[in-house]
Length: 84
Image 1 (tube, one colour):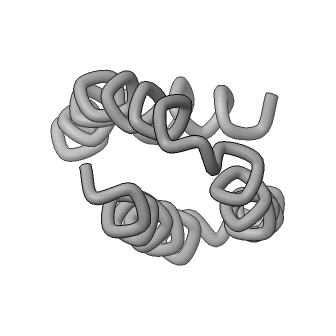
Image 2 (cartoon, helix red, strand yellow; image 1 turned 180 degrees about the vertical axis):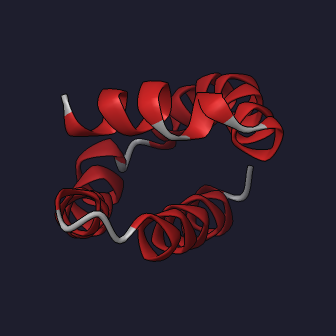
């Protein structure tokens, strides 16, 4: 619910936020497919989990800019991890 609320109530209200949401829906499926094909999905997802928890914590504290920066870092690290 926290992530959905951030998307709906913060990101979708700005043009920059809408672009980030569009980018997410464009890049997420190939990243997920690559994670599934990697044979290391558990390892990769376990590495992502603390990052996701950190983003959620920052959102709950209304630290939106920090949460967004952490999210972008997480996406980049995940892309590098799976070489997507």
